[in-house]
Length: 113
Image (cartoon, rainbow, N blue to C red; front, side):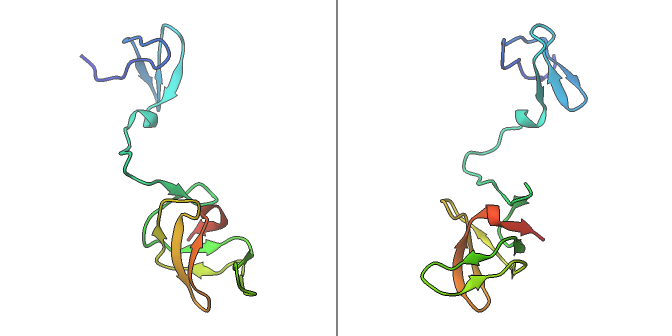
């Protein structure tokens, strides 16, 4: 017996592999094999502006001038931020930026180095 998953559309057990896809011969539904890998719900997946997965301790570059709330300073384009920490919430990166201090950033405004 094979360990291939059943079709998510029609629950057919006759699925087969075609390169990186699973295919159902009964309803012709195709889906990627990567989606079949279960990810722990506790695991937090955060991606940068280019779609690269970020991890704790990564170095990122700011891709847009960002105004610092409550201050007249600005985080300039190209600013490197080292040793980021990922958190859950609207602003999903905690970091320290030289000359500014502790900040929270949105992952959509950074690029992994």
